Amino acid sequence: MEGRMDMINGSLGDKIIRYALPLAVTGVLQQLFNAADLAVVGHFSGKEAMAAVGSNAPVIGLLVNLFVGISLGSNVIIAKSIGQGDRENISKTVHTSVIVALLGGVFLTVLGELLAPGVVEMLDVPAEVYPLAVKYLRIYLAGMPVILLYNFEAAIFRSCGNTQMPLAALVVSGILNVILNLFFVRGLGMDVDGVATATVISNLVSSAILFAALVKTTLAIRIRPGKLRVYGDVLGQILKIGVPAGIQGMIFSFANIIIQSAVNSLGTTVMAASSAAYNLEIFSYYIMNSFGQACTTFIGQNYGAGKSERCLKTLKLCLLQSFVSTAAVSVLILCFSDPLLGIFNTDPEVIATGRIRLEYIFFAYLFSFAQEGLSGYLRGFGVSFIPAACTVVGICGVRLTWIFTVFRQSPSFATIMQVYPLSLGITAVVILVVTLFVKPSKRYIVRHDSP
Image 1: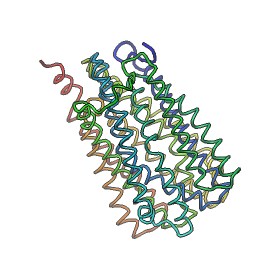
Image 2: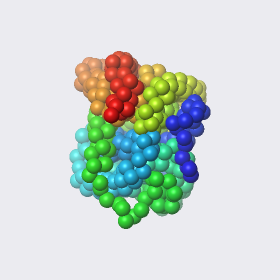
Image 3: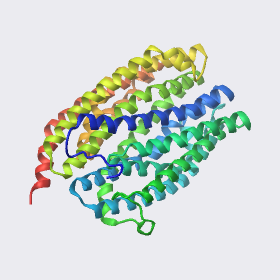
């Protein structure tokens, strides 16, 4: 079938790589295009504008992650339905997902516009950065309907094994984003409003490309405009998996907002350095995360087909491939950290501080790959609450406690960074123990196969 990968028959290792690689490249390119925002304002508008863009990342993540989590619910339901051969449920899930994305986007736009000044103020952003941060956030939030639509459409394509189409749409819109960044900022003399406007326009293009592709496809995921509505039974299935994942993302982002507030309290230089390092470290994260998402989709389809042995094999392969790939990219970035950080800002103090963040974060990724893989494994069976609870307690709880206790006693950038390996290490151990106890490949496959 057009654009579909057979996940329930044949070899697994090569298919996981073929699935995960475009997904990882999509994440990396997405971050490159986001980094272009920072690079353009950093070079043409100064480090205050750069700090304003970077400081908004946790806020945007907090508002977006609930619905991104819900899109994961769509992915799992469609993947399971593909394994079961249930075309009707696939169609209902696709059409419900599109409406949920658009309505959710409108909700976030309205809510965000009302709360933007107060939220930025909560971040303890320096006075010289505050008005720029508010301006950027307001414009960015106006694009929430199309931003969420792209994420849901991408989840629909990925559920049937097609990770190339979301990548193609992103390449087109990302190149447009860079061109518009330079046009608005360099050509028209705009600052953060220029890069925010470019981001909204480029997301509109990417969501339109995927929508057109879904209308034209011959697969069961095809969109028929006349069927666009919310199907209550399917919505319940999506929310059961998606809401815990979304709440997990929201609480995770809330913890990051607290961390970002601590970073902001150390001054503009540290803010700029942290933003620059984040835009490098995230490359490794997207590679790691792509294998976690691959695990979810492969498990979902094989769970639907009742093939427990392939579920366990998928987990083992995803963990191995994730570790090797993430470690290789992390070492490469560390080896060239100074020139890479210099792309964003050439201030020696910014580069030195950014290097500190990279060293701590990449050490933390030694634990994070296991947490991502095991979470993806559980969600593939529709078990969403357990990884959410483990993450909330192990990551968010530890980080919040650390910032309000240890950081207050020793307010330095290194102190903030130390919480990353600590929290991820604790979470990886907890989720491993829970997974061994739950044994989803036996419990849920058996339950599925029972009359």
